[in-house]
Length: 214
Image 1 (cartoon, rainbow, N blue to C red):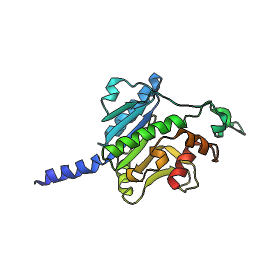
Image 2: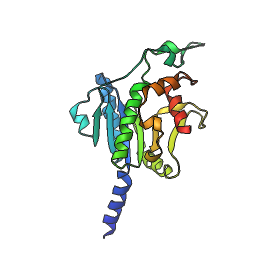
Image 3: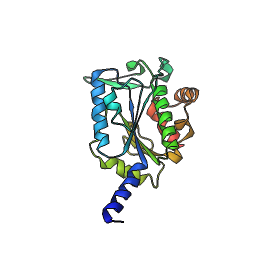
Image 4: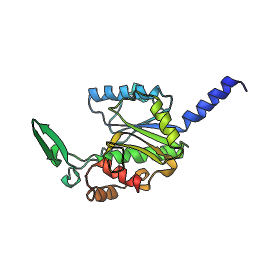
């Protein structure tokens, strides 16, 4: 076996164990453009891509992915007991209210996570890396670095202060498939609703952080 073939085989094995999940809801042309920009940035990494969307995506974008799933049910709720507080700065004043949002979209997001978890598990992927559709992966080495870290850790989550007590940034996170929490990979609407009404701060990111820490 030549050195070139050995190197190619190594990189094939390395890249094929990881799946990049892009979650999307793109009802407008601008959001479709943002999604394609995100997807193009991820494709440059060489990893397989799974796109899960609650809106139909143009066929030319679908063809860029190894997997594409359309989920018909964009399950949201207008129950204000599920809303978290958000802030709005106006001059010297900081206004906080749970009514800056009109809907809770956590059910829809977790439907996507459960779909991705089952695909990754059934098709032998070792890690899942999640990125939201309106982000762009500017450093292609990030996924590779996460993959190396997942040799020793179950998940990689970013918080605003780098500690478990910080607020989690939902735009990029990585998980070891064999260590995925039951309530991440198995969709349970009643459980999500019950837990969301208990936690503070009442954000979906807090729910995600809690089930991984547990």
